[in-house]
Image (cartoon, rainbow, N blue to C red; front, top):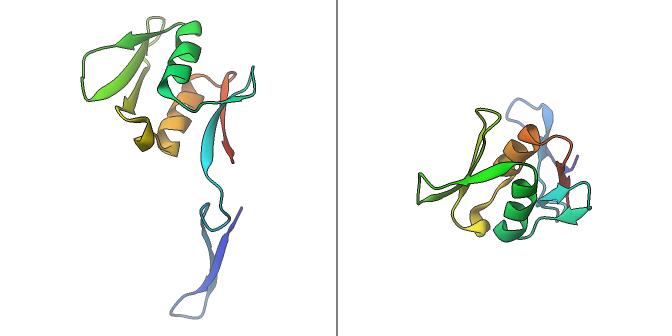
Length: 103
């Protein structure tokens, strides 16, 4: 846990967490291969191998669906907008294959 200690107006000290304060960023890690996911092409290969299928309903998003469940993974079209909230969505739906780590 990293961050900055801040005094509030009433004199209480609290920790404001900040990954950027420590120069860290979150990345998605494919745990079986220990590979950091650095592109949608790489992520798509991993998800397809786990039984996910590309879903083409919304042209503004990259979506994957698994026939054996009701789960849907929705990602922004540009990888540059891929954030930790999207990473955690993938982790929750693929617990044994992905995790989010600080880089």
